[in-house]
Image 1 (cartoon, rainbow, N blue to C red):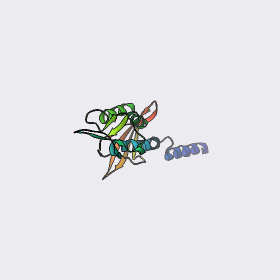
Image 2 (cartoon, rainbow, N blue to C red):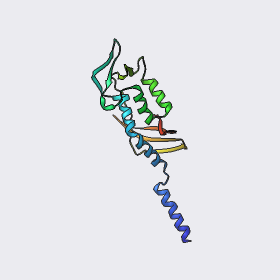
Image 3 (cartoon, rainbow, N blue to C red):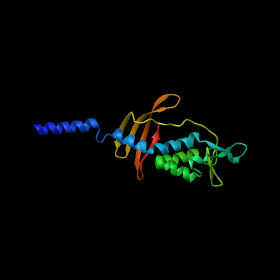
Image 4 (cartoon, rainbow, N blue to C red):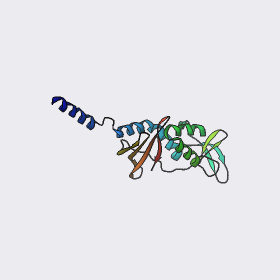
Amino acid sequence: MMKKIFWLLVSVALFLTGCGNKSSQADDVLTGLYDDYCKAEEILFHADLDMEQKLLEDDIYTFYALSPEYECETVSQLEELLEKVYTKEKVKQLLETYVGDEGQIFKEIDGKLGRMPADAPGTYFELPAEETEKVNEKEIKVKTKVEDDTVYSVEIRLQKEDTGWRISEIF
């Protein structure tokens, strides 16, 4: 009888301490991605520009080099940074949206990454996560808060790839 009670107490203790807790896994993944995620968000949406380094100016567009603090001087360096955070599919989508020849925010000019002056809201999420749902062995849904002018909830989808867990969507 004592053995049964002991194992029951061990089981309850493991359950209550969250052994194998998905939330903990999601928080660990997001914590590991967070610094590179913030750097990518900063570059994509709020980057400080080196206004002394005008790379291109015409009737419509003006592109400046990013401040040296970002250590991101080419499109391939931007892509490498994004690949540390996002799934391959999301990186492709981001590059198609933000980098290019016509109307995009970024353009590589004479081997240097140029950015138009623009500011858009980024999404800086809070940890720990409010809720998590393990969809399967390769996907986790995470609900967490974002604070800018207001506080609101977002859903982050994490997907496991060959290189580890990456963000596939934030909405």
